[in-house]
Length: 164
Image (cartoon, rainbow, N blue to C red; front, top):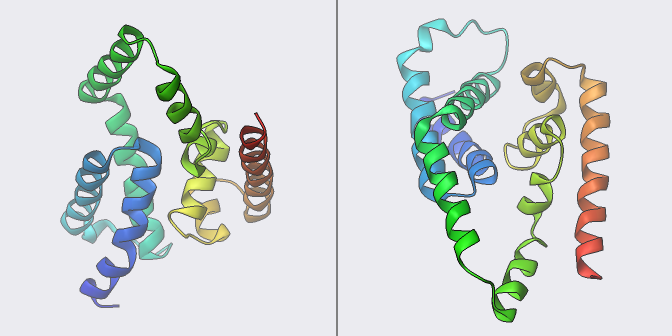
């Protein structure tokens, strides 16, 4: 597969994966570029035991872990929390906040870590269950079951929020 075609095909999936996890466009763009830079720089280490797409997503998972451990992320998170605590919410703001919880991304964020990872890789990364299983070190069947349960929780969360 030509590099340009691969990039055009996989780039949106990796960006969506990062955006769903960080909920920040700039962070998602930066992390996506880091993945492709790292992949080009370390392509000689690609063993061919998985697809290139799966290999790229394993790099993406590592980059996301590094991002969450970084001081930059912690500082931004603390700043965001302190801003939220300083401002009292008006009825309008409360309504807007309530509406935001009805989104798919917010529902995914409420899942446990394993379910959230599998759901984002499947929904935003558009990876097959086999590829996801390789990334999370579970069997393909177990990955399907976890995704099915996550999907049920997401649907229930969206349905519950609609009637509150």
